[in-house]
Image 1: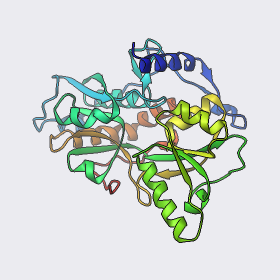
Image 2 (image 1 turned 120 degrees about the vertical axis):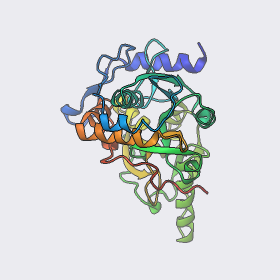
Image 3 (image 1 turned 45 degrees about the vertical axis):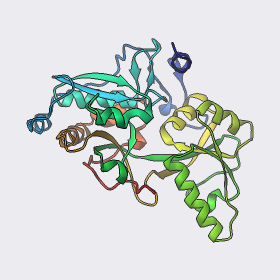
Image 4 (image 1 turned 180 degrees about the vertical axis):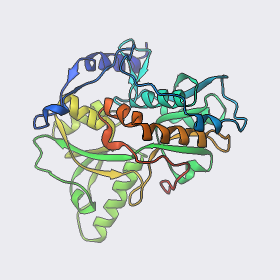
Length: 314
């Protein structure tokens, strides 16, 4: 077992017990997270005839009768390894199962390193990628997209922090902020810094970490004031550890909107069926229930779209 998979297995094993939200949340918000390989609580869906009909355009699956989905098991609650260190579990796998059910297909996962998904999808190793992929205008040149979750980035601070709210550029002036290098969230912070400088405000200093453990240690040891990264893993850390709290969210497409989506091959004829399947799941309530199972109901969308406007890459 690789060190990365060993870490994830140990993390999942610890997380398999019931965890609670930080003090101050309502009793109804107390929830447990299931990291068992059996996933008996995973929701299933009925076949959606309208979505199935959209597959009659001749799309050829990697394996007949199977929806083969790439997923990067990098962070709970989106996707991680179960306690057996082999089974992929989380919000994205749950959603993938519902989509496969709606299309009348079996489901197969292909674990990938997140940066590798574009090459694997383009070369036909899998039918789709369901792994927290945001819609961008650059990616739309090569891939089709079906939106399924809000693209939210979030500011979290230690529970003892005096910071109460971060929602606009002036709120980060002078702060020490942890983020990811080369990411959309870094680009947002750099733009906010430019705006602050133009208004005579002090810029924020950015600190870069490759993993949440190191970032959390820096934040909790007062080497940084705030962390700004994708909302879901931070919300999970807040819920299970009780050491950080949310002070603001920003859409990944700021100042516009860019959501998380299924990626499929450009023009292959799968995207419309995926969108129809997703909207059927939304209408029937299974979609919302699946997100709620992992504490992500605040990231639900009201309607899925095919290839909507996305983040405008530099």
